[in-house]
Length: 359
Image (cartoon, rainbow, N blue to C red):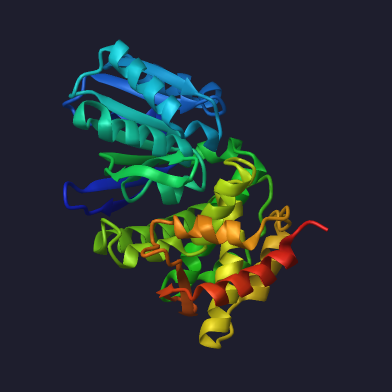
C-alpha cells in the first residue's frame, strides 16, 4: 500500500492506494463514528457494495442508497432525494458518508456531506481511474443545466481509500476517461512526465505496475498544487487545463454523451493549439492527437456553433468580466492563465471545430 498525505487548512488526510483495501476499510474510519451511510451508483453497487457492507456491519450501523450511474445523476433533484433518505435513515452529525464510486459519486456524495446538517464527515472510495483526480482536493459539486459543477463547495474528505482491484471491472470508456486526466497532469507538471504517458497503450487489461505508477504520479501532482492553493485562487486553476472547452462540450452535448475525460481530451487538444498560436512554441499537439487516435478516443463532434460554445466557456468558473480565461502552456510543464481576446478565440475555435465535426 502507498500513502500520500494531503494538507489542508481544516485537516490533513491520507490518500491510501493498494489492492484489497475495501476489506480493510475499518482501519481508515475514525473511531468517532457509529453510523455509516454509503452512497453508490447502479454500476458499482452490484460489484462492491456487499463487500463494504459486510466488512463494516459488525462494527457500525450501515445504511445506503444507490443512484443511477452517469453524470446525469449530479443534479438538484437527486441531491434533494438523497438528503431526504439521509434524514429518514436517522444519520446525525456524528455519522460518516462513504462515496463508493467514480467521480460523479464523489462529487454528489461530497456535496451532500458538505451541506447535510451543515457538514458531516465523508470518505472517498474511488472506483475509477478518473477519480484519482476528482477524489483528491476537496472540490464537491452538482451540475446546473447552465454549466458543470456550478453548485458546489470546498470540503475535504477525512480519507481517500483507493482499492485498485476495483479498477479491473471498469469499462474501457472509463479507462480512457481516467487516462486523459493523467495525461493532463503529465503536461502541466514540471518536469513533465508526458513521455511516460505517451508510451501507454490502453486496453481492456490494465497493467497493475504501470497503473500504480501513473496513478501515484497523477495524485502527487494534484496534491502538490492543492496544498499550495486549496481554494483555487491562483495556481490550482492550472488543473483545469483542457477543461474550459471540455466542460462547455459536456454541458452543450448533454452530460454523459462524452465522458468527462473524453471531453477534456478534446479540450486539451484545443488548448495545445491555442498555446502554440499564442506563444509561438512547439508543443506535443500532434503526438497527443496520435495518442488519442491510437487509444480510440472519440475525436468527432456534431456541429455546434462557435458562439454557443464561447457563451458556455464564459460561464466557466475561471472566467470573469464576461471574458474567457484559459489555461495555456508557455512550454510543456509551464502552465499560465490567459484572458482570451474574443474575436481571436472565436476564429481559432471555429477553425478547430471544423476539423472535429463529423463528416
